[in-house]
Length: 389
Image 1 (cartoon, rainbow, N blue to C red):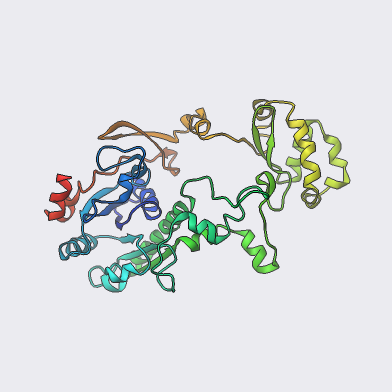
Image 2 (cartoon, rainbow, N blue to C red):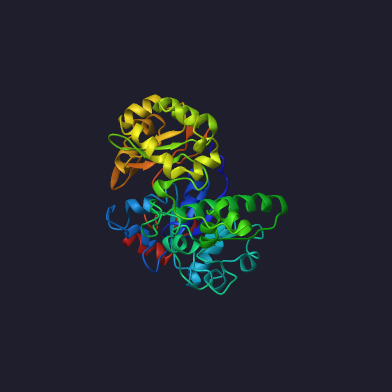
């Protein structure tokens, strides 16, 4: 039994942020009923290429929607609103990732729906929130990286600001945050019998990722800047280092690891060098220290250093995407799963990162567009259109 079996979530969602969060909950056993806009043929992510799965599905879409049911209705129609109310009468939560001004206009907030289901938790994922001057603004992941300061901190000091390498890191962290908010509020609602609104915005989540860099500025006026070679802001040596055939990331976060590195590279003399005697001095003199370590690591291959240092100090190879996903370690840990899809019987996907009692969670592809409409809300014109499409 998955831990969220018995939890029903209805989600008015598209693209990335909300779908990522509800996908994790669906993988954990929640019944996630995905509402797809019948007026436009469903979530636009279904048509996001380049790798399509038939006429109205894609690998992009499935990456955010495993284990979900698909119900096609038009929420702007009287029929669609009635179908939604039927669904939420027995739901624990209603999720949407609409523009901040739309939930109230479309009657998707707790104030409106409490009369239908007083225990309902209404989760709103928007770009900037619902209660400010930007409520009507659309927004996407990369815009949040830009405005939050994250892009300013990413990249080499002499290069342009850069986005994170992950395709949708703010969408996905926002989805995770929404999932935590949803579960917390559902626990409260089951105890008190009263639901609520839960708001999560992309910009708020992006800002929250600044972590201690934000604390340093807010309290000390310290302005963190881009660091060379992806180095840590305050600890050294913590950065990328070249080998004879590639790159490694080494993290000497403690004096113990610093000593292990010096021993491994044959530079124990640096342990008594007054320029590097303390963590603060190693950070202050990082530009002098880095070439010394570079010179030793370049003498051997990445494989040599990994064999020598794995399990001794924190170290990892810098891999390209193919090397990362084809790693035998991922096969051993079952982090790559194979699921069946009508258009791709052996579709490979990333496993849910959560294990329960040491076991990976079972996954299945999301239903075809509108396939579950009749089962959940009965025969509708939208169901007829979904079948014909």
